[in-house]
Image 1 (cartoon, rainbow, N blue to C red):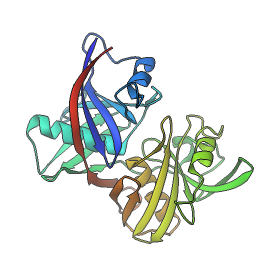
Image 2 (image 1 turned 45 degrees about the vertical axis):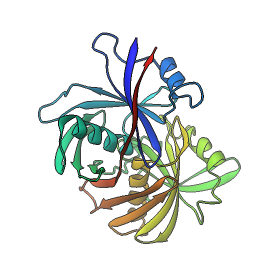
Image 3 (image 1 turned 180 degrees about the horizontal axis):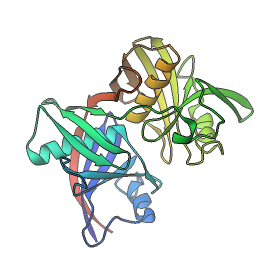
Image 4 (image 1 turned 90 degrees about the horizontal axis):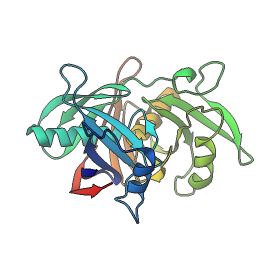
Length: 276
């Protein structure tokens, strides 16, 4: 099976994007894990698989597979890259398109400078929707991992997030606390873990340990999750600059019953093919 692909990234959060084969379907998890390997494969955080629109007024449907081969519900930077690629294919700029995804419809605003804004849905703090095992919704939860009690907020941005406020992202124990919380039994589908340093009510620094991937240079849904939790706690304003190791994203959330918007750059790195 020959797989034609486009390598893309959003602030270093990198993807391989390809069309689902009408005859072969989607490569199995073992093949995706091999392709994700950064020394012997293509290397990526997520694979984004495009297929024909499933609903009217959408330009494509996409699925997301993490580097470990597992399918996940949503990916903010991935959504922005898919929107940019579909705009490139269709010759569109300075307009709005709609994509279909496992987490629902995604509105995307294409700009001429490769910046893309996407509406990532309404943040959901209900534990069952994260999913997170708790008796009732709360602003803050606590659990013990690696001998330390961790305070965090839990939210779904179409996928699960646990947001921890830290004094400094530079010294945060991302490589130990991240996987411990990702795989904690209170998160039945595992979770992404955000480490948030608040610089001001309009500016945060963020590191993200992504479910099934590890720490990444950027995470769009992670940025949205951190801002949503920060607003819920009264720490952040409605528009926030989010600095990640790979660069800067902008998040805007006008509050309950409103979608959260994510804005940032996209880039096509190269195109290629591989024989599976």
